[in-house]
Image 1 (cartoon, helix red, strand yellow):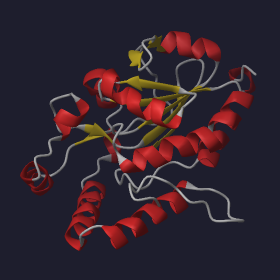
Image 2 (cartoon, helix red, strand yellow):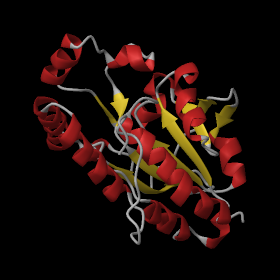
Image 3 (tube, rainbow, N blue to C red):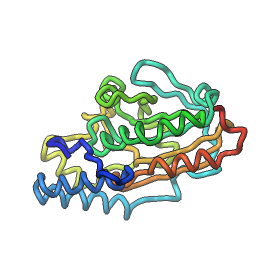
Length: 237
């Protein structure tokens, strides 16, 4: 890890995985951050897992209603237009400055995007952050897939994947002069839990994986396997 905690150093001879990447991030934090900060991060993630409501989450078999989102480069993306390309993979993340997101999205570019292209599928990463701020993560990592604003967390709300920090975490953040609503531009504490969704060309969810702990995210191989499991007519190679 570099001094900004956002540069992954691959282990020679080992396959790349988000699990290994986030293990490095946590080790970096233990070495470079105050123990109280590290423990607060762990406690908050544990609380989110304990308070999770899986019964509310998007799941296989759900039909996705039409939606429109704002790509950071200015394009308006609709569900209908995206599905004309073939199957759609949605990856929800928090915001452009999130350290874990700055590791996860480049990982998906390296390990997921090539396989999706081979299968005729489209990758769309979504955050509630306003486009003029969210664009930073696409530029920083030269991402070649769609990165778009889910304005007002509309789709995240529909999918039941939103969360907000508990009161202790909010007070700690405010004591540091940090309000996530100012960072995202949404004016709220709500963020999406890291989520991967595979949608078939008929608008049906075939796979959904939600992680309340933001240091646990769906591996590329898992998503590719879900795309491979789609009916043959789903593929637009």
